Image (cartoon, rainbow, N blue to C red; front, side, top):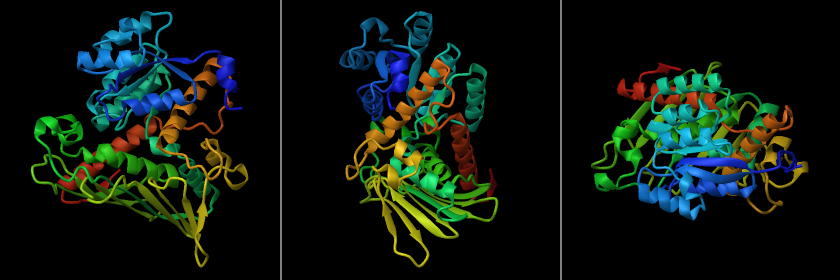
Length: 388
């Protein structure tokens, strides 16, 4: 049953946040997702570099003022020393801080849920993986779109051979009608300020989502890539459009289009996986529809909500009755739920109790940063093929 592990553990997980204040684009999504299944209680945080924003966020989240910190270093030390200190921390800061913060908390015995991209560089990602291994802590990376039921269904269908051997992997993320003009520099989001993630930040902000999604569904990692990136918006200091071709070990091919200047688009994340016998197609803006098409047959629209029509992996992610589409927050919440259940299972000594629980790990983070580094290098060499 869904709540057996929570019932056996007997209380909610003591949870903290670094970043994610009320001025954050993603902070409240984390809080909604964590609250949904009653598995977390927010008890502490260093939720902004602005002390006023940190205090106001803590007040709105009903966090004890004594456990609202102005510095994450103070939070890590103080919470680790408390008998009732945080057990899990979410990191929702800009990515250049992720590795330092995650390592700091894991060294103090605290598990970590981290926003993407995982780190600023591939070297930091490799070091962070070593920190995870050394500490023995649970580490999750919030590539939230893998929480959708029909994305997990697609992954299970590929593994079952429903479309035969994978030949082509397409995953695009052309995002955003609100990014086609560049504001004044002091009003730009960090993704458009090169001091945070360099001029190649598009690869981390949306590229890692597309790359990880392609890997998650297809089960394949490419062996080489060629990338071409452009700045299409006057005054912008970072690339805002990218076209990437991928090669796989057995000759299969992949393609990605990433863009912040796809005027008229809303979100844009979509995949199309082609095999020797058929294909699977999914679009984030219509997440309850997965299209399965075999050669010379009509396309089949697969929908969530009924165990007799879905694989166990796909149905595990469903929250609602058939005909009631699961949305973005529910997909995000699936990562939080699965993380909590693995946390409970570890504490209770119940290995094997969470067969369908899933979240992206530090290994996924290293893979995405390897993609990031290779694509940046390829673009700098006029699209040269770079081995992964």
